[in-house]
Amino acid sequence: MTLKREKRVMLFRKKEYTVHYHFYLCNESGGQFTSTELDEMNLVQVYNQYRDEHNLLFPEEIRA
Image (cartoon, rainbow, N blue to C red; front, side, top):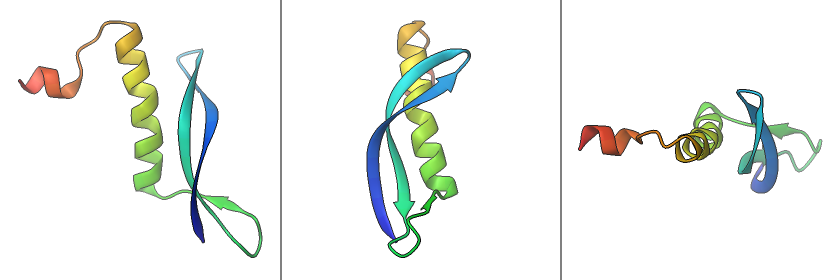
């Protein structure tokens, strides 16, 4: 399998956010798969855009 990245739109709280979606592409079947780590990476992008849009603190800022 090959690790791929493409722009996709993800829906979060009834709003669309464009992310660089990471996934594995099976070279034989053409199927697309993710792991838990890739799912988290994809979601963090959405969460960060949401935080930025609504002026919410990022986890690093809260810890500091």
